[in-house]
Image (cartoon, rainbow, N blue to C red; front, top):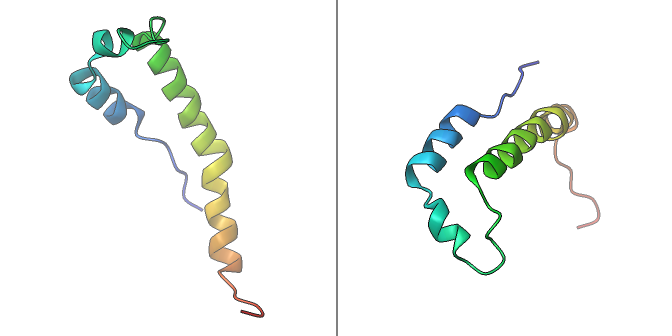
Length: 70
């Protein structure tokens, strides 16, 4: 079984180069949004995708799709 690792470095690069954090902070309710917060959320999303979502692929590959009474 292959192991999925979210491409966090690639995502971080895109976010740091393209995301205008000061513009986001200027939006109502977003004054606490920082690149550090974004990075923490990204890190946890990477863990979630590796530990929870990726294992679901194997189940789908083994059992496959089925259509009953359709």
